[in-house]
Image (cartoon, rainbow, N blue to C red; front, side, top):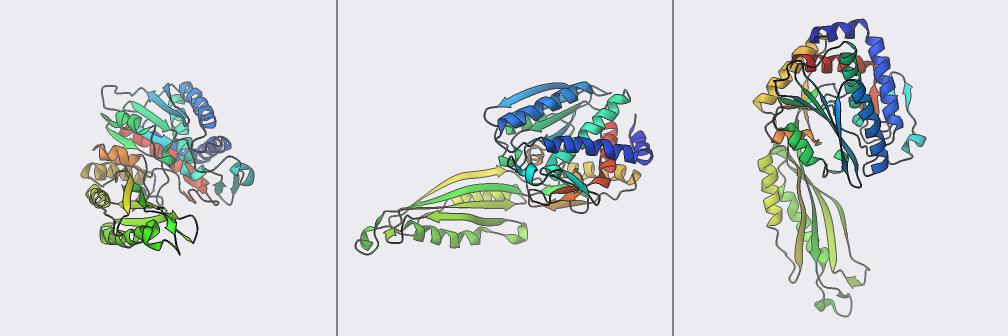
Length: 384
């Protein structure tokens, strides 16, 4: 089976591709896998291991204590001497157990709804269908294929980052079936993310009797919040959002402690490093107060390099054979593809199924987009 065969298959058996991929998606959504629920993620990883082994993959399970399982599957390539292609996806979702009871999987007016359907179980369903088609035809990807399904992407990839980076090094490229752009395009730019806690420490005192003895931590933090705005650079895509702020114990007590959680986004790593350095250089304004900074850069940005542009051009040409204009775009959200791109490995993100509502109550995919995604993935694996 070649890339051309996938184009023909998409044209001649679109309904079959759609129905099989949709069935796989329904089965995946039926398995609720919230981040941090190790038992449920372990169970899904075990089922997928069996399914992948049945289509000729070798599977290794890497268990992460308290988080679940990171699954690595390897499929031999027709040209085994070539560098492998890495496909990077995640098993966890943001939806707590019980969400499926409230919003069960359903297909309505050409859309398939369900928690985790769009982000990103539809992408996994497409990969499984693509590999099943290759296996049934007795075919292999051109290059060796490595599939990494992680268990903790939605909460920072703390257990999986090392495995992601180890898998990416030496790879020809990385394909990421995260949700696509709203028009169906891929993502060639993603912002990096910094997550920080800024703590102010003062000294408690009676607000009416011992005012002079107190050091107001909330006042200190207020000074800092005002100053944070100056670090943003919207023209370069750099934003800072103080999203949570708390402190104090009672209105008649000068607060001894206050803290805020800060989200930083940046298109260029140099901007992230600039903001990080500025945050670490913060100094108290209120006499007697102390400041403590926790956190740092969680994910680097995915910056559009010439190699990424070339990989996108290959994908767009293949999509054109399927009568699809595959555009490209940027997003403020991060993914595990940010880690691989930062290593200099060409990374094409946002290859997932058309839809909407990531992390939201109306999360869904467009059912009619499934055949195109299977055909595109098959063509990429057969021709890269």
